[in-house]
Image (cartoon, rainbow, N blue to C red):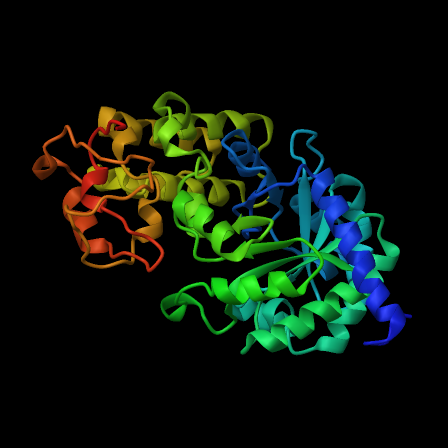
Length: 409
């Protein structure tokens, strides 16, 4: 049985989880740049692409534990975890039954470095299925789930959570999870009600307080839209790593590459598109292949499509990887040389409004003094860009200067 809270065994279990957690973290290479679980978007091909461009640890998309246990077809179409180049890897499961979660973990434990419990999904599907962030009030059940998995699986158990209504309760819950066997926690710095238009800023101060209260590695998640945010988050919170599952990593698989050493021939939009399709040839998505590939291309080529609106429906209708690639090749060709001068996180900022300030420049792309060499008035995307962007609190972005060629100081 799991230790009784505040007993001697309970405190010893917390310390034991801490030792196992740091051993696991070091065994994985002490990763700081992490690709978070993203439904139908962090599939094997995209994980490999991100790894080639700076990612040091990846999560699988969330996998439903009950269906995984009950349905062999689901297992075949969702488990893309047998690639030797895809390590270190954490498989994320969701569910609310301890024995089912442990059984699901047994299907994946030989092909990953840890199994993660999703306690952060705030979507309605999680509400209906009673998993994700909608389990955060079920403290006894959560301890049972972690304990069952910890005692039965060969690999460490980790958790990804959201904040409760106050940080003190979140710390208490985290300590209970650690005592039950959780040896690493990723904290999304928002509550389950902070989604969509009311998401607000990620609470890095709360993450710092949680990190200080726990003996295990803690990752931060949420509000990371630039490499500057990434560095600032580690500085402010002291976390072991930053788990980027935001739209930013979907816009740019090369998100983690310092832009001061950015090489367009390796990390530019056109190069990333071609490289992704090369990987897909060897590792095609097992689940919703056409939809998964199209989803990535719509995000990576977001600004490019404003130059060729007639190709948008063609991209939406293309089904096979080959046909999607043909449409993408035409999009790239029409945009010409300026394609690699577009900000790669354009899709991330598509809902921001009315921000353009030529007097401010950003280090988002690593340029201390941006020097546009293209007439901005003729840029085909600038009109849309002006209307669609405003800065976040953490970003100090000079979006107007991101167009054109830039030189380092």
